[in-house]
Image (tube, rainbow, N blue to C red; front, side, top):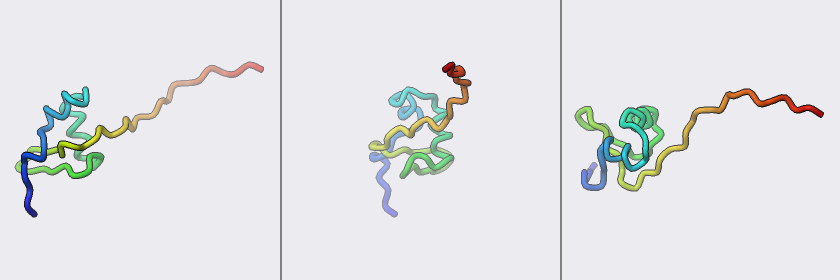
Length: 68
């Protein structure tokens, strides 16, 4: 496999572009939510054209009861 590392960016660069922490980007990578992400020598590389995954957390707040 021929990989050009100029086609990839580092975790900290990706985090600042997406407005999330570097830890969150690493969690996205380990969960497989960023297609094409590579790990080489303990460092994650994210494709330059990768889109930020949607936030998978759910809103579990209680909704007010409807009065009829």
